[in-house]
Amino acid sequence: MTQTTDAASETAPVRDPEAGSQDPGTGGVGRRRRTRVHRAWFVAAVTFVTIIGAAAFRSLPGLLIDPLHDEFDWSRGTIGLAVSVNLALYGLTAPFAAALMDRFGIRRVVALALVVIAVGSGATVWMTEAWQLLLCWGLLVGLGSGSMALAFAATVTNRWFTERRGLVTGILTAASASGQLIFLPVLSWIVSEHSWRPAAVTVALAALAVVPFVWLLLRDHPADVGLKPYGATEFVEKPPPVPGAARRALNVLFSAARTGPFWLLAGTFAICGASTNGLIQTHFVPAAHDHGMPITAAASLLAVIGVFDVVGTIASGWFTDRFDPRRLLAVYYALRGVSLLFLPLLLGPSVHPPMVFFIVFYGLDWVATVPPTIALCRDRFGDDSAIVFGWVLASHQVGAALVAFLGGVARDAFGSYNVMWYASGALCAVAALMALVIRRGVVPGEVALAPNAARS
Image 1 (cartoon, rainbow, N blue to C red):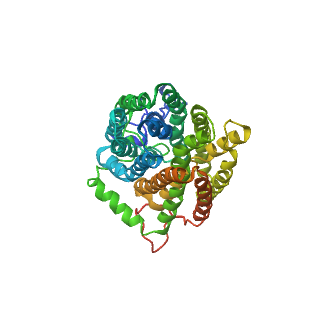
Image 2 (cartoon, helix red, strand yellow):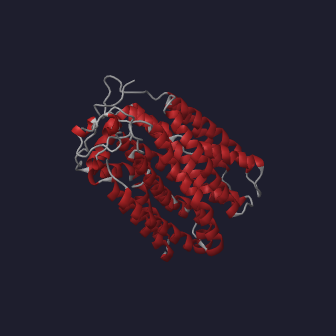
Image 3 (cartoon, helix red, strand yellow):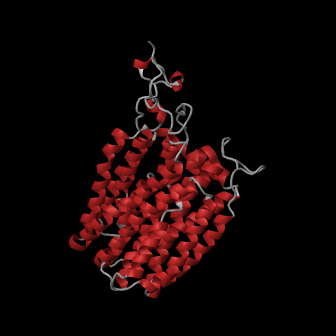
């Protein structure tokens, strides 16, 4: 009696363990055995945990501004400059990291990035000059974190999934918010009770703790374990390593830059970064402290943003699988802009219901923009979409870096952050309009980056 084999086994080097087998006791016609959970979900889970562990570094900058100002008498503009370098490199490194993952594999690049984050964060405990903050937190942590930016999540999703991509993108994007939820209250307590140095060491240890999970459990491609991507009907061979990672990343940029949708996506995402990482994540805690709110209370509010960020981002991924991502982006940016215009009226020494409403509302919208933005990149640029999204993410972080710096300058110049709230709210309205005019698919006569780019 012969057992039925999966059709994919004729082309795959290893039989697909996800394919069910028939019951030999009924002559090969019986019920299929219970299907296992696809390996892609385990890879997504490891990616989720990895991003959570690395998210500790994103929780710390806003907590460092006042302690470093008090200890070293550095201006908030100087400290904001280091944060802005970190944010800019977080974005500018992403497309090169995506290309390096195609060359050397996801596992090697991510493991090295975690070690660089740990070295940069741990070395800050010995700094005495502002340039050392720029070197350790700005350069090293920026480079390491940029190698694990959302382009990492996009690469994993593109390789391991052909179905549920929007949902998986939302879940992996939410991992960063989950990390903020886990680490922010802990780090704020450490800063308040034991100064900022133990908090920096905590970030370093958190990054190192994730390295074994990445090295032992993460796999670069479904073909490495003889599987089809989740939802695929045919086995997909692992592509050969792509040499010249830096050259490829730049070539993709030059090609994408000749298309209008790239600049619209980059512009909207720059405003996204300015109104989240650059403004709220960096300056909300010191702004609330200016109004008499304890640092721990303000940090706890940011952690609550992380709670609802998870819900909002996963929901956004689900919506992206079903609705026009351009309209989703327009709604997200418009609502965010309105909420920022009301924030100056809500800040005060205590946590009151309108402030809680703002936090919940802003949390739902925080990175809900990521799944539809990745979907538009995939729709427009096909096989190179992860690298294109890396460059779009670079614009996100450049916007964040600019506002992180200008926020500190505005606080030094005007004594408050009000002008930044109003300006960011107006920019979000502009982003909503930009999102609506992004064209879908490849337009005839316009340069397409990949022959398989989706058309609509």
